Amino acid sequence: MSFGSFEELVNYAIEKEKEAAAFYDEVAGQETFSGSKDMLADFANEERKHQKMLEGILSNKGKLSDYKLKWIPDMKRSNYLVEMKYQKGMPYKDILAIAMKREEKALEFYNDAARESKNKDHAKMFKVLAQEEAKHKLGLEKLYDDYMAIQGD
Image (cartoon, rainbow, N blue to C red; front, top):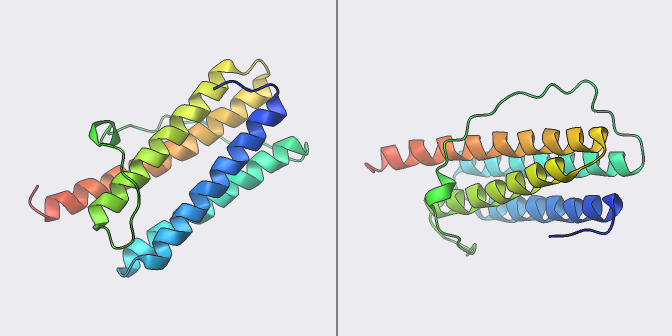
């Protein structure tokens, strides 16, 4: 994917964060298990934080100096799952699979943006966002593993 400017790239990322928050809000609203509902609502809030971070960078109000980058392990569970479309009432494991794939794609997008950025501050912002998506992905992969273990798989 090619962008004509940094602003175009960030605006695209903002739209993707809005989409992610809307997805998690929708799924949380349909989930009956309170733990799942809370987890999905938390993810929606995290995506809104990412949106605000990106908006802050565009308006030159964003500060990344306090953010410490650290390695987040990748269990790679989502690498072996097929893409699915969300459907109301689908099983919990499928909801987790969709969410993992979404986070995998977001992680890949921000890593690519960081690598291609010529501005070190912009690159750091994208690395920060990649790290955030990696945390989400890891959390979802752990939930998926735990759920599948309970199911005997």
